[in-house]
Amino acid sequence: MAKTDFPVEIRDLVIPGTSGRYVYHCLGCGRDWSIEDLLYTCPECRSVLLIEDREWDRLKKVPGRAWRQLFDYRKMVDHPSLNGIFLYYELIAPVIPLEDVICLGEGHTPVVEANEILQDWVGMQFYVKNDGQNPSASFKDRGMAAAFSYINYAMKRRGLDSVLAICASTGDTSASAALYASYLGKKVKSVVLLPHGKVTPQQLAQPLSNGATVLEIPGVFDDCMKIVEFLADNYPVALLNSKNAWRIKGQESYSYELAQAFNYDLGNHTVVAPIGNAGNITAIISGFLNLYDLGIIDSLPRILGVQSEHANPVYRYYLEPEACNRRFEPVKVRPSVAQAAMIGNPVSMPRVIYLVEKYREIGGYESFLVEEVKEQEIMESMLVANRNGHIVCTQGGEGIAGLRKALKRGIIDRSGVAVVDSTAHVLKFLVFQEKYFTDSFEPEFEIETRESLKNRPRYVCPPDLEKTPADGGVLTEEEFELFVRRTAIEIARILNIDNKG
Ligand SMILES: *Cc1c(COP(=O)(O)O)cnc(C)c1O
Ligand SMILES: [Zn+2]
Image (cartoon, rainbow, N blue to C red):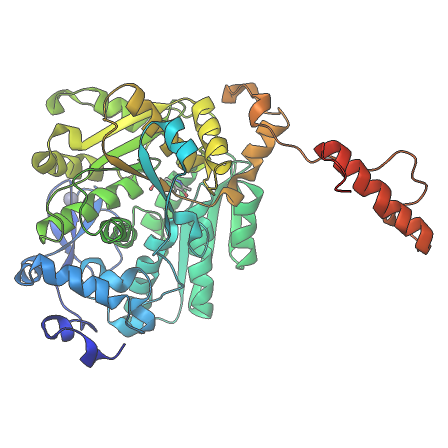
């Protein structure tokens, strides 16, 4: 669509120029720091940072209606930098020139309504947003698109010709970081630290395929995180965990897309997401607050965070209703099928505390809730969802289980509409499906399998057949015909279907 075809009011905004004044804002001491350097923690007090736009109010000069129209029309613009999460450029990172933006097709993931069977099983109308349909098959790509666009931009500005990008990961961060780093070719060398034996084979294959240096550490994610933090504090490396505030900016796009998908009317909606390191929930809260502040949405949706009983520090924190009595305590994690969220000491906890307070101030206490679920419930929710046409990962299953539980406990009501974040593609987490189907869960998972949810392949070979194609050699015409006929009859017998004639 040509620029001249856009409504006059938004014509000049369609292809945006740089604007805004971004700073790292410290949540500990409240100081602002220049974005000139890549900072992860406050140089003064070591607290985590959030990126804020000190010229944010300029965006309020554009009415909410015009923003909505702009974002809707921008979908029709053919500009490589605006095709992904940077469609919401002004809210993501307008300090980065469009030509420095890296877009690998992230974001704009489908929102699919659950079928009747699944809605009945859960107890209300709901949708799944398939963030597994991102380039590296998880929502992490949203954050990496922003973080690597910043790295690309900062390198050009400072004339750097190489950067060492490093992250700790429960699997998906490393897959995503390695993908975006490899796109930048020789400019960025990517190193990932994984907890040995605690990522799935598919997740391990991803950074290997993108040529990253893959280092496995004896420990869990929280241990890997401490090591990369030490490296980032003492060596010249770019940290790509969600401690990196650019990641949060990119992940806010999830909220922008949801608002757009529901025609900017979320007053009756519950947005459900699993919580691990709490970067995703931080971004979701922040994103909706931004939309509200600019008048793009008139009311905030309810946000429901979900954690497993085996990794539940955020749930425990919010059990205490009075803010002044809450005390954050890390937990020691136990094995969880929601392995990507198996984190006992979430790095973004201070961000969650800071943003939830703002969120509840506007939306009320009930606008942010956290639910806890059993491993059993996570597994069954994933399996049941996928039997009804979804591609939900274990963390998506965690979200569905949380929604179901919250309805049963009556902390949310059935009349609204929910959207569950399936944060990755089911194919990344096949090991857990396999453990379920073959009854091989280690006892620590505390999962009892049910026959009705299992599925196994069945080998079909009529016992009286002398030769099959698998035996090697060439079958004669008669042998082959016999093989086809006998096997087909055997299959018909298994399926219990009669001959047409
Ligand atoms: C990283 C991840 C999570 C947890 O997100 P946080 O931002 O760490 O809370 C959940 N699901 C999947 C698939 C992930 O990769
Ligand atoms: Zn500080």
